[in-house]
Image 1 (cartoon, rainbow, N blue to C red):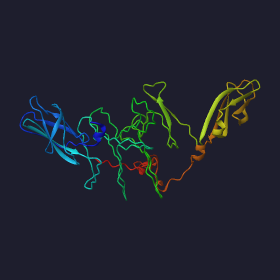
Image 2: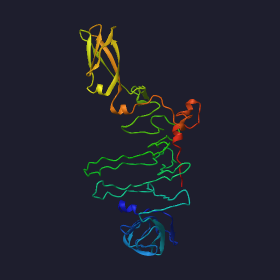
Image 3: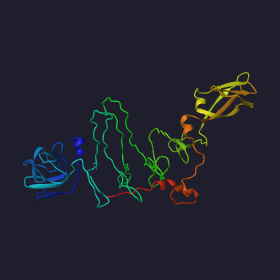
Image 4: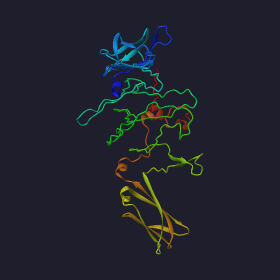
Length: 408
């Protein structure tokens, strides 16, 4: 069965029963209809014996056997099927097993107004998939050539309260000690077919766009994540997000604090080491180094060619090393250089220069120093527990109410 043909049907194991009084009647465990090949594949036990071949019917219509064994039958010849449930029957001698198979002819469109769940699939096979979906294409000669989506979900609208979730995924519940929880959803971006030798720009695993807003509302966030309830060390488990590689932020990175964390250099097996970021109200760059003045007490410091293009508003710090001496900036930064002067020759000087970014992006996106909270955030806090409001929802929680988990 091809992947494309799998999409033509979605199968639900509704019931399995065996007829007759013999000890080992045929038992159908699963069945799949491939409308494209006009075939049905049946898996089970005792589907034939050494002396009796099976007979197969689908809703009373006899099917022709393609292949058969005690555990699998492939049969063909059924009439065109619409959407619905059909009874599959396997008879071996005088013993019969039946199975209700549900066929969806694509495209399938359904509407349900009777309950909280419009469509439900339960897969009981060990490691089986509830839904396996592949988008159509690409088979086209025009530009651009577009493929279809595997799954496309739209949450229900609302006039009051909360709208529905487009796609909700829940990882499987754990019942055994030491069991490893799996993700509520796993996504892998499209890329080159292995062995094809074709170079492509592979797609992202997740592409998220926040909801648009007009009028006086606020636009939605592309992604909002919170850690699971329970213990957390804040660095290796119980995180709102974890990235296994480099991260690029094309806009501002907003945070309450920041640090690096590494295995402790002196005890890497048992400890972590933290260092806080250096922060400033300015978009500041820091440069430093050491230089030794010559016989006349002068030293020239050469900076990168792009230094004055990137930075402005320079500030200087000088410290003499190894001996008491006076050191000063004899000439400011110009043409990628500045001069240090000391009152003695041969003095080692540690220097530091800071500059304020003036590149195109920084000029267009200056970081504001003080900002009024929006009307909806007035009276609320990012971290209410730090201001004597333990148990009160923070601003982020107010903006992102907990999704409703629809359970079967």
